[in-house]
Image 1 (cartoon, helix red, strand yellow):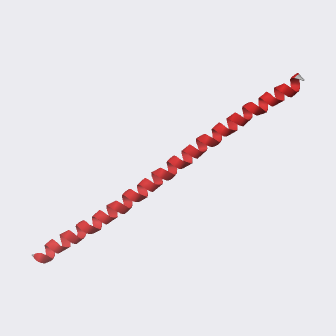
Image 2 (image 1 turned 60 degrees about the vertical axis):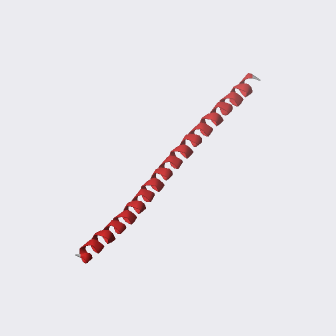
Image 3 (image 1 turned 120 degrees about the vertical axis):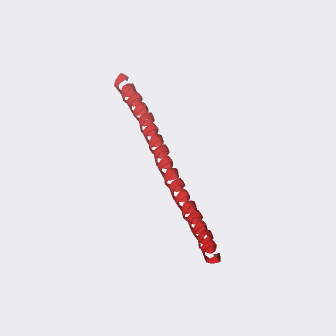
Length: 64
């Protein structure tokens, strides 16, 4: 009976390790994705601000 119990314990432990690794991977992927989304958002906002500032500058120049 002892070998069977050992195998069961081994697989039980292995299962926890696999779940833990998957959990870490998911967290890592989520982190990377959220960083990419933040970068993309920041880029879009910067482009938008850049465009509006450019228009302001152009209007100032055209006024003179």
